Image (cartoon, protein in one colour):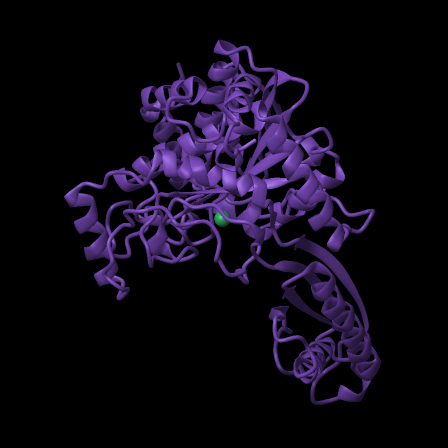
Amino acid sequence: MQRETIGNGAKILLTLGFLLAPAMPADANDAPKKLAFEVVDRNAQQMTDVSDALFYFGELGMQEFESTKLLNDTLTAAGFKVELGGAGMPTNLWAEYGSGRPKIAIVTEIDALPGGSQTPGTYERKPLVANGPGHMEGHNTHGGVASMAAFAVKEVMRRHNIPGTVAISFGPAEEQLASRPYLVRAGMFKDVDAIILLHIRDTLATGFGVQNYAAISSVFTFYGKTAHGATNPWDGKDAVDAIELMDIGFDKLREHLRPTYRAHRTITVGGIQPNIIPDKGQIWWFVRDASMPAAKETYDKLLKIAEGAALMTGTTWDVKYAASAWPQLVNKAIAEAVQKNIELVGVPQWSEQEQQFAKDFQKAAEKPVVGLRTAPVPLGGRTQAASSNDNGDVTWVVPAGSVNFPSSVPGIEYHEWKAAVTPVSSISHKGQVAGAKVLAASIIDLLTTPELLQKARAEFEVESKKTPYFSLVPPDAKPDIDLNRAEMEKYRAELTKFYLRKTPRFN
Ligand SMILES: [Zn+2]
């Protein structure tokens, strides 16, 4: 029930409504939220210690061992039940407090990116470890914010005797879209009533509708027959020719695809030297579109093109599913509740020094010199992004909200070393405090306002049925837990020197 919808003469109803639902969305005098905010303020240092520690681990997807160890320790000490290794992935972490329904889960990720190592605070290129991995998307901040918010909710549940469960799902390898479809397949969200997707951004915001793109990632391998390129090329079957023909075939197809599509590839095995006819060639494709059925349609055509390329070259081929992601379907009812909390919490008070740093950084990066944002983003009007996040899969099986918090500098794009300059700065820290408060308040709303959950569920039933969910994961596929292992092991010893070795404890 929302106050502004109550007409004249509804005073009694209003009072009754208040009694029935003590945590009406976004009320500054609301005791549970007030307590949650106090808990966050009191533990701000512990929260950012978690996030900062994760930054220096700089761990790639599926190799988040130090990161999940710290989160496991921190959350266990904070009274959470923690499970590592769910859905067959050693670094998949699920933590929860409470029991039964409603069950609300934060869904986020903590992985870094290859080549992202950078010395924080300096916007000249200066890696901590040459060529090493690092947090150039600030996923490290998700660890602190999610843990903090869940702990604040736990304290509120205890003090106010609120039934239900608060959970956190830290899924591995978001940057390779490699885990969430497996979490869904394993049924990890079966008894969850709603989720909130958590992600760093340069502003405090939420949204609704379909937020980003569907993606399918597959590796195609062709097998031919080797021969000398000069003496008996007629005996050879060139697997790299098949790759080139696949490329040409797809380029012919491009004209006939929806304007919304995206497709990109990289050749991962392209032969050895010119006078050896290659018997192996490999090409890795990403196919995307605004919806999964549209992406799948293009992907099925790509399979036909591979078949054609093999026919033309007399080679054989196979295809290995690598990853996939549905677009995020975000619930409007939850977004409206989150937006009220965003307005309640507000954007952090930036110091003059922080604003100046942001402007100098923007200038050095040749971006518009706008400084840090001083107001939250109004609800609605965000266009569908062409990027993907595999947490999208979860949003088609359970109603989802989203929270973005202001811990990076506007104009500094992720997936570039520059975005690793600020994840441990005071800008990031203040943004995390705001994010944890909005997240905690929104989970409290979902736990204590049955009509909000009902409204979200009703909307979800309509919206999700417009595109019934199907999994792209082949039935016999297993998560690639060796992903990034070799790359990570190259740098781990050197990274160890920078570890913060902190033991944050929430209280
Ligand atoms: Zn991300």
